[in-house]
Image (tube, rainbow, N blue to C red):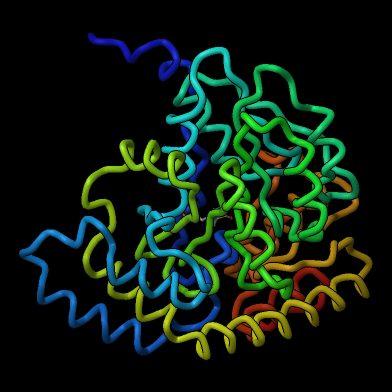
Length: 355
Ligand SMILES: *Cc1c(COP(=O)(O)O)cnc(C)c1O
């Protein structure tokens, strides 16, 4: 029988989230707890009528909507089937055998997978107090480093570094090394993003965003990024033509134009999140301050985390185990609807549950 090429045969499959069973509520994938913008839903329904046609391969309406909201040049925006597609294409474009892709200790696991696909080596800079450290990243750079991935705010930690630190990081990295700032949770982060978008003008920095979290469109698979001109041109060669469906483009364009809906989602998520985090801390658990739509919950040890996970599952609630991130004593919980969070809290406090 035919065998896969050696680097694929050697790869572990990307760890997918558990499939949610009947009657189970997933807090495992950081999806929005709230319904998608009604404007996005009706734009999607209308776009369904155009299903016989290929979508706009150049994402013109979507790019214009993104650029309009953020004050960007639409020519610098590329769209992907989720930002994962953009991460994969960036790595394939700029790293190959013998090259290093540098992430951080608790950085996004998919970056390691994408590096393996490109036969590049994934290395990690340590973090300090579950937070990205610009100095540790700078210390980890070698003459083989081609790309540096920093997720801010971070997943699965929820922590953030100030924009000024990312600017300092960029200024101290070698100019021929590409910095990729993954802002999948950027909408939840109060800081003005323009200083980060401005870094792209330097020609050596890419900023990635997604519709999967604050915009409530994880199922539509739309991500976008701001790319310097020659970098974007190379990445575009590796994207599948017609990568984002017409329905998804229409939904995403309408969703980003409905800033009021997104801001309401972010505000309500933050209220539930901060109360949940306070209550967890009051129950003796460790919770770093989150700037996202999830919290990282630290138990006394891995066995206690596993027992909590089992009790939550028995109560119909699925969180995400963090063993794959080297944090086996932690569970990550998406901020879900208030009623689900209250039930999760009751389980974690060991309250008696009603049958
Ligand atoms: C959710 C997430 C993404 C977004 O992935 P999509 O492919 O756009 O759904 C990217 N990076 C991080 C760190 C994430 O948590």
